[in-house]
Length: 301
Figure (spheres, rainbow, N blue to C red):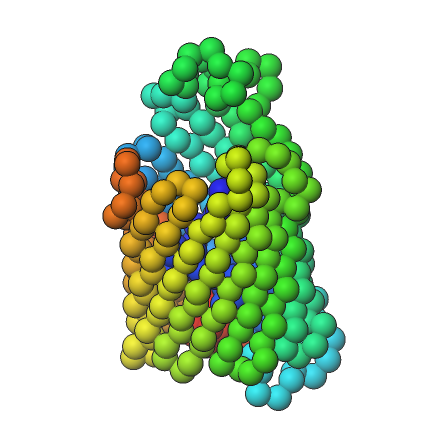
């Protein structure tokens, strides 16, 4: 689905529509950029051995330097316009279809109310693939093209996040809303509900894909996190995809210091015709711990 998979996103099984703030919000629900005050830099590396897939990229999230009003009492929300940039370069199966793609995103978010946030992400996607290297040889559907990329498109995502109480968050995000009409960038709608306590958080998401299959198909995602010793994050997630007819178990660890975090996650298909493994490693730097420290990292990546 064109997901940019950060370590926390993957460990939660993809359930980050409600709680995924900081750099994860750039890749998922942009409204969450305004839900906490952060200034984070992130680098990520991903690898899948079965598909010989590699991903390199990262992002910058800033919701702490544009303060338009006093900080709401008892909240960690940003007070003005929040923004972020992110992107990845990926390659898959270099000895076969030799697909390469670049995914670039620019996100903006604003707190309409102290507990209501809206956001939008502009996305550029460029996909190239070798000619006549797919399983069907020269094929108009799955083949690459000699003179141009397999896909080159601009689209956008939009999201809303609502926090009725500090511990509970609801999120909704639509992705690829220009309806490109290709499974490389499918139009999807996702909703999530997240619970965030002092040392424990959990989220459940449902996503509907309107493009890839002849009828809309759903994906269900559940993730949890326990934060120990004010530093160690232990994460576990599960995903059911009715379109791909797969189920996957995921998990991860993160060490969150005052100025940086180091995180790693793995996802393994446990129900699939061709099981796949995906690993992601991430490093984040917190520019100002007073506004971007461990609390913000725990509350939404």
